[in-house]
Every structure is written in C-alpha cells, then in structure tokens.
Length: 256
Ligand code: GDP
Image 1 (tube, rainbow, N blue to C red):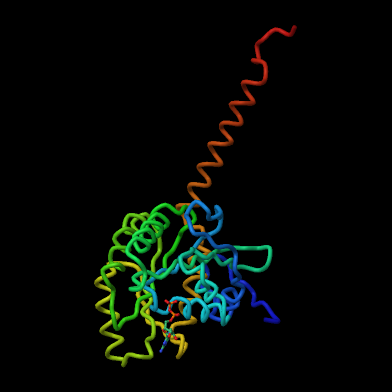
Image 2: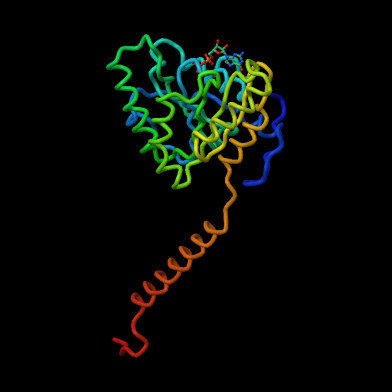
C-alpha cells in the first residue's frame, strides 16, 4: 500500500478503510509447535480457530488482503503449529493474530489429534496475551462437538472478559433465509459473543470484521481502568511520601 490511512483514536470505531489498512500490515512473526516455545507478547493477541476446511486461511488472507499470508500455515511441517502474525506499522506492533491449526481432520492419527487438542486447550486456557477468539465455522455443518468443547473450555475466560466472535464462513453458499436461520441457531448455541456471516468470495462481512478486530485490539480506556490507574498512582505517591519521611531525620531529632 502506498498510503497508510490515519489511525483512529483508541476505542473510536475506525472506518473500514482504516481498519483494512491496519489488517494489511499483517506479517509473519513466528511459528511454534509447543506452547512454551511461543514468545511472550505484550500486545493484544487474537486467535483464529476452527475445524480444518472451515475457511480460516482464506478468511485471514482476505482480511489481510494478502494471497499467501495464512497459507504459510499450510506448508508441510507448519500445519500443526501455532503461527503468529504481527499487526501495526513496522516497529510499532500493536496486536498479534494467532493462527491455530485446524482440528477434526479425519486423516490425522488419533494420537496426533489428542496431542493437538491438548496444545490448543492449553493455549486457550493459559495464554496470557490472548484477548479475543475468532471461531470459524462452516454454517452448512454448524458448530460441531469439537467447536462446542472449545467454547466450553473458553467459558471462564469469556466470563472474565475474553471477547469472542463466531464467523459463519462461505456465506455465498447459503440463501438469505438460510443465512438468517444459521445466524439465529448459532447465536443460541454460542451463548454470548458475536456471531456474523462471512464470505471471502463475495466480501461479505469483511469490513465489519476488520473494524471489530481493530476495536478489540485498541480498547478504550474505560472508567474502571482509569479509576484503577488513579488508585495505583495515589498508592504509589503515598508509599513514596512514607519512604521520604523514613529517610529524613525526625523533625525533633538533635543534630549530631
Ligand atoms: P482452512 O482449512 O480452514 O484454512 O480452510 P481454507 O481457507 O483452506 O478453505 C477451505 C475451502 O473452502 C477452500 O476450497 C476454499 O476455497 C473454500 N472457501 C473458503 N472461503 C470461502 C468462501 O468465502 N466462499 C466459498 N464459496 N468458498 C470458500
């Protein structure tokens, strides 16, 4: 891209052009086969998960407007890895996308499947920087047992503030009536969070998802956070005053 759209203020809804400009900065950061090999990240991390063939790579590539980005995750040797992509202008990484391996692929051995489910659940439960999940689902199959298990594992984190979006992919394969039905069924099953239709082919939902991810990655400092910051500053000031009083000689002490 020759021009970078002006970044909106944190918390303010960005226009689609700004959000897509931000998504377009996505570049490969690192890959890891094990959770402990992932670097600690101090910016919001948004994970993309879903059954294999749900349309996850196509969705990431469409959002990033790059043909090959997430197909890096399909290279031999990387299909079972967690692949991280950095977002934000060069030198100013402000969010990370995590592309998790697709699950439920029939040709994978049972022991590999189990190993992967463990790595993925551990990631979802314990990854500190994880702030949001995008669960990709082919609406013609609906949420499967594995998708539901994943949502259940996530529930405590969702209750603690983790955001989640269920994206119903390949919307172009459904009529409008089928889309409406899929949306309402999935909303019931997902029990909270956002549910949206998405089609890479017809570019349905692309702008809205980019805008939502931008907002998730740049939350407004809300009143509670402000109050907590004020309280912390006050406590620090009090501690500093106490330390200073201890260091100084008492006012009535005799000079040596
Ligand atoms: P992944 O395994 O979840 O990464 O899935 P892919 O992104 O590789 O997509 C699986 C298949 O679905 C491929 O044949 C894609 O071309 C197709 N696909 C993905 N997104 C769409 C879409 O929006 N519309 C249609 N019609 N097909 C799609």
